[in-house]
Length: 454
Image (tube, rainbow, N blue to C red):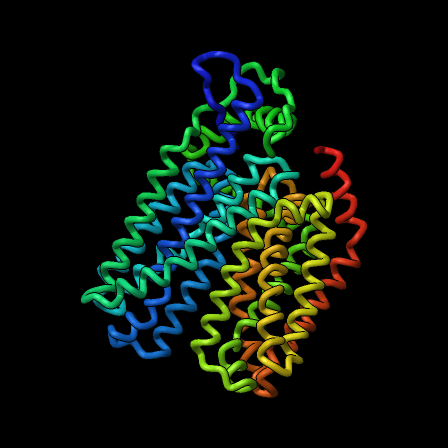
C-alpha cells in the first residue's frame, strides 16, 4: 500500500514530514474505526425487536441471523484478498458504500423479506475494519504495529460502547428503528467521504535516500524508507488493478488464497480459532450463569459486561508500554496473555462469590484485548505483509467458524452444569497454549528477524 507524505511547499521532504503525514493518516483511520462500530452498534441491538415486530418467528429470525454469519464466513477471505489485488482505497470505499446501501435498505424494511434482502450487502461487504487493519499494517513498521492496532481497537470499542446508548434513546421515538437505520447509513456515507478525502496521492516520488531517524515519533525513518521502496515497486499494480478484467482479479485472488492455504500458518490460525471459541464460550451463558449461581439479575450482568468493555478500551491504549516491556516479542506476549486468560476463566468457573467474578472479569478484559491484537500481529509477522488483507480475511473466517460452533458447544455443555461452557473454554485454551509451546522455535525465529529489522 502506498504511504502518503506531506508536501512542504515543494521543498525537501524529510523524515519528520513523512512521519507526520503517516501519523495523520493513521489517526484518520482511528476515526474510521470509531464511526464504523458506532454506526453498527446503533442498529444491531434493535434488530431482533424489529424483525419480531414484522411478524417473524424466532426460527425465521434465527435463520436470517445464521445466513448473515455464513455470508461473513465465506466473504471475509475473498474481500480481504480482493483488497490485496485492487488496493486498499478502492476496496475500502466499495465495502463502506455497499454497507451503507444495506443499512439504507434496512431503514426501508417493512417486511421480513426486505429485512433479509437488506442483510445481503452487509453480510458480504461489511469487512471495513479488516481492510482498515490491513491498511494500518501497510502504513506502519512491524515494531509499531501492535501499538497502532491496539489504539485502533480501542477507538472502535469506544464507538461500540456509545452506539447502543444512542440507539436505545432514538428507538424510544415513533419509527425510531427506521430513523436509526438511516442515521447508520449516513454515518457510513460520512466514513466513505472521510476515506475518499485521505491524501492517498501524496506519495514519495523522489529523495528517498534523505530520511533520517530523529527519534521524535513512532514512525522510524528506516520504516518509512522501506515502505516507500515497497510502494515504488507496487504502485503501478495497485493503481491499475482495480480496472483490470474481473477474471484477472479472480485469478490473482485465487493465487493468493492458495499461497495462504499451502503456508505454514495452520498453527497460528488454530490458536486463533481455539482462543476465539474459548472466549465465546465464556460469554455464551454469562448472564444465565450469574443468575443461577449467584442470583444476580440480567441488569447486573449488563453493567459488568459494559465495565469489561470500557477496560478493554484502556487495555488497547496501554499496548504500547506493554509491548515495550516485552521488547516487542509478540509471541511471548501472546503466550502470557493466553495463559492469563485461561487462568482467569478457570477462576470464574470455580468462583464462590460474585466478587471473584468481578475480579476475573476485570483482568480478563485486559488479557483478551491484548491477545486479540497479538494474534493478528503474529499472523502478519509469520505470513508477511505482502498479503495482509488475505491473512486478515482468513483470520476473520476462522473467527466466524468459532461463532458458529461456540453456541452449539455451549448448549451441550450447559446440559451438564452452568459452569460447563467456561470449563470447556479452559480446556480449549490449554490446547492453544500447548500448540504455541510446541511451535516455540518457529515463533522465536520470526521474532528475532522482526527485532533485527527494527
